[in-house]
Image 1 (cartoon, helix red, strand yellow):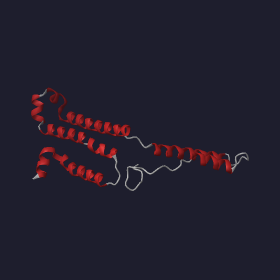
Image 2 (spheres, helix red, strand yellow):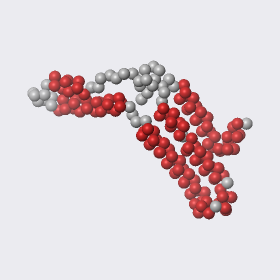
Image 3 (cartoon, helix red, strand yellow):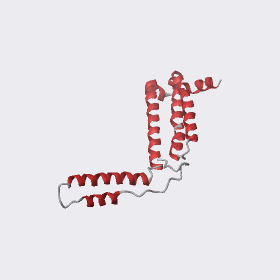
Image 4 (spheres, helix red, strand yellow):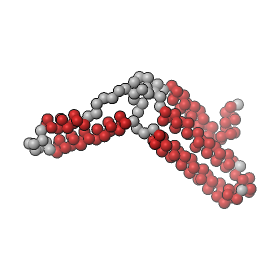
Length: 164
């Protein structure tokens, strides 16, 4: 059957295929359009293929070790470490590209900066509370200035909520 085909082709990685399809189904059922998640899901094919090729080579390693000098030089364990290293490097590149291609929305960054500034203003208020020159009104005005006005609802989600 289909399971035997996947097991013969991919070995233990055949258990990852249903997990991948379940993740894809959840992305399709989500009411928010999330291009970053879709790109990451599509890019995970590359580490999967790298591991599948590595497992395939490890199954026939004794033949390849006799015919190709590289495999004879590194050995089965060395080749396994190389394949795992390549897979980890691919995952790191995918994560880096996703943060470069899909940075946090400006709205989220502004809110984070405003929250940090508000915390600083509140700390300054607590520090200067004992002095007579720093009044409650001045502290309230500083906090009001640092608050970010509410923005329009996002166009990515059907319910109007932001996708991040």
